[in-house]
Amino acid sequence: MEINILHATMSYSKEDGYVGKVEFEVSGHKEPYEIVLHSKKRQDWSYGLFFLKQPGDEEQIEEVEDWLEDSDEAYLMLIDAAMAALPEENKGGSGGERDGASLS
Image (tube, rainbow, N blue to C red):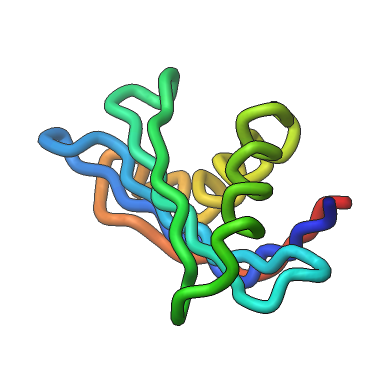
């Protein structure tokens, strides 16, 4: 499965910890996706996977979900993309954005 990251953001607050969003496409899928990431201390991450713009094929989103569960490399790439959007000087501050990246 090949993914292309469209846009990533990450913010940090003492109350919420790290909250990130990554918008991405999967080759061969009609609709793009958004994964929302959360971690208090950047160790254990929880996530929600959604269609980015409009509902799409449920079988395709389930395929992506299964792939993320099975592929540490893919899941970590999305986390890394979000973390890269958080500027170093803002690790305890507001947040940032980043565009572009891919994994095949």
